[in-house]
Image 1 (cartoon, rainbow, N blue to C red):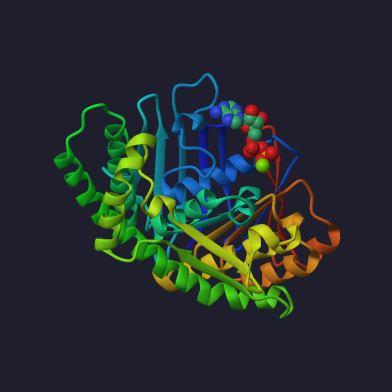
Image 2: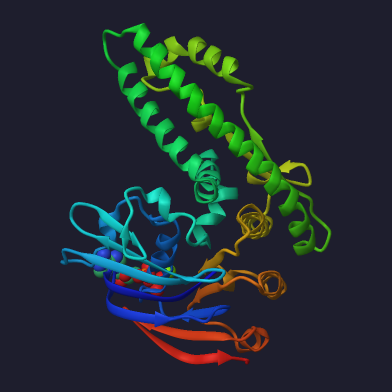
Length: 363
Ligand SMILES: Nc1ncnc2c1ncn2[C@@H]1O[C@H](COP(=O)(O)OP(=O)(O)O)[C@@H](O)[C@H]1O
Ligand SMILES: [Mg+2]
């Protein structure tokens, strides 16, 4: 699947903008703060119903405006889908082919997007939270059930945490909380384990190729929870300390995604170059995994990361991803590289205005 076009109205720094895309490659050039990332954000939202930059939907509304709209035509296997998202002061309204969705989760299977931005380098560089977020984002997209399990888990966790802080507590009430926490939590853990195993199966080979056979990349889901019983047991054991802290200290919200290069934890031992390559391998593996799980080609959004890669990796990426639609943003791309790029469109973004600069380079 691919994006045919997008139309933005009062979306971030875009007043009124319509753009048609190349089914394969779209290069978006422009100085800083002109709107490159905002354009990719609008596409990402078509896939997941929320931004990769913020959880606050109101940020999508152009400063000083009441309402914002982003619409897109997505080309699927044999038909087009029209997606419209309107943001107003109350929230957002999502429509698919003119029909209003009652739940965001129903948007998910229309188009799959994978974004790779400087933030994603943090998957390998930073702590457990970014890694969990990485797992959650991908799983939410390919498993609507996971999306609702995670939402429910978080809701109960929040309630449980706030009750832990109360002076007088009712242990029976905690039995009820724990029962649902365990129900959703176990499903989350199982899906994350399964996803990580599949990801491992794919990213190892990709990483080996990118590192010219020198490095072995491994990912592993790490949790202390074995099954329902062990989760319940741990909740019981930690109850008193959790009371003191006012926080639930066990559960999938504390689990870890281990990433290793040649058997060593990449966060501690990896060089910057290795970390960068590992996050690229994981992103490319994710594209492959979406293909396998959904039977659809996702769209790959590369925000500001392309020029960070060396020429060898840039070539590898373009070659490996030749059957998916790619969006690349950069302040500039070297002529030498432009010449080896497959056919595609080049756009120039200037202060919230997008111009098609050169249609079908190298065609
Ligand atoms: N809600 C908004 N309304 C108007 N402008 C916005 C809004 N949110 C962000 N911007 C502007 O968008 C610009 C940043 O756009 P961005 O896409 O991140 O730039 P870049 O081209 O560097 O990727 C900034 O000038 C910022 O002020
Ligand atoms: Mg940017």
